[in-house]
Length: 400
Length: 190
Image 1 (cartoon, chains in turn purple, blue):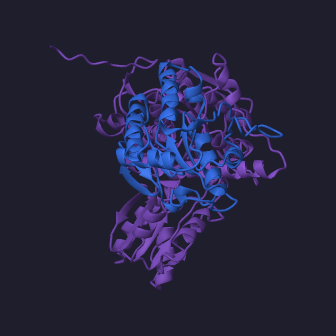
Image 2 (cartoon, rainbow over the protein chains, first blue to last red; image 1 turned 180 degrees about the horizontal axis):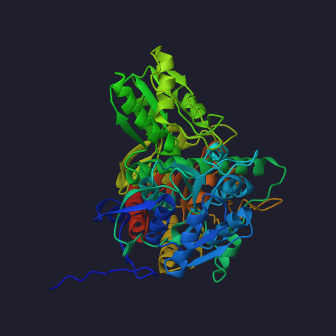
Image 3 (cartoon, rainbow over the protein chains, first blue to last red; image 1 turned 60 degrees about the vertical axis):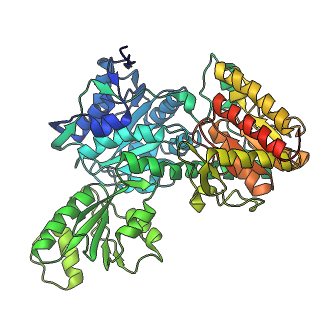
């Protein structure tokens, strides 16, 4: 007797495959594209139900390209919001109604929409936000700078940080899978540095575009889906009313802990789908370690190569997730380190603060929050090398 | 879930912050230990059969006829209550009730401790409660009562319960009822 196989297709006619197949097993071919185009390619394979957009540099192109996917039938619903606040509210409505959703924003757009991010987390919706980081007001800048990520750290959303267009492509697909786990089910913000990744072309390996993630099943959500046809759904979704009594305080406290617990529960899933929460580069025995994320880790890798020429062994610990923060992984990774540099693209050093917080009492290494650039500056590898050579008292050969 | 009994007024620390995560598929969580599902089911039945005022709290996923599985599960909840000699107090609505609920006949995830205090419940089973509300309630129960909590979850489980059974569908519920009958006989009760 011949075995029969059920093959499922999504709305675009793509064959539905398992996340593991799509991310790890499907054959891949090489393409040359920008980070924005990588967003389009990921969304194309993600069985997305709804996307809402609003233009702001540098994410406008990615948002526009998702719109093209709607025209082509890959995305169920697509429209432009009235502002970023409107976008983030409207995308929340789509998610509460049971849709797989994605949107994009940058810099001042993030700040305008800010109230919505803890609301997303509190209502346990697995919205994905692709954040193409840029400077925030004031003074106004459209240039790359990731200060805004510091504002998002405690919103209750997962925060992942992509270094390259390849990272971004894979993280967007993995982001849906992890965020939609019933015991996680909080939003995921996939961050990439604006311009450096969104607007530059690089080689990227893509699986075929006739396969896609399984559609989202909202009936596995930890809260009832809003469904006008099913009356209980309408009255089961209300949040508690803030009254001034002990009961509402306790509920609010428990609710907030639950959102943060949900992020913690994402660890095993993220470890699997991201192949670890951190990545190592360089001499594993080196006492000089760069802890970085995004473009700063790419530049730190270049600095490691230059330092090799100086006879100074060094290594990079790249953080793929910021929330959850890879606490144990980082502590293990910096064992034996004497100097930890945290290069960043912002003036406040939010990553340095995180690194200090989680290494306190766990590492004797000197932690140095440098180099730090902002407002659109680049971070040439030579600048990083210069910081290291200053520390070691060596002559600075590289002229910036 | 590492402790039983009131851990303080704030539902902190929650179990994940003590390093306790949900069990992997096919396993169960008993306090902070990963165990075989059958071991956890046996202990859960024992807790329900030996502690005062055992109660089952069925949630909307088994109270409303969303689908055929919900209807079957509802029948099994009733059978489970008969075997365990447990009361059934429904969690039919997740909205908080003001000025107060009637704790003799209902439980609410936003203030589940009121029902547990009023009925002096020392062991309970959550079944059919949406995961978020089960988690919110279980943290409050842990913070404010000494009730032994058991979660029968259709999804990944609830690490804030003292015993977590995951992926519980009709087959698993039937298995639990069978084990509960055995434990009951072992305790010399019919």
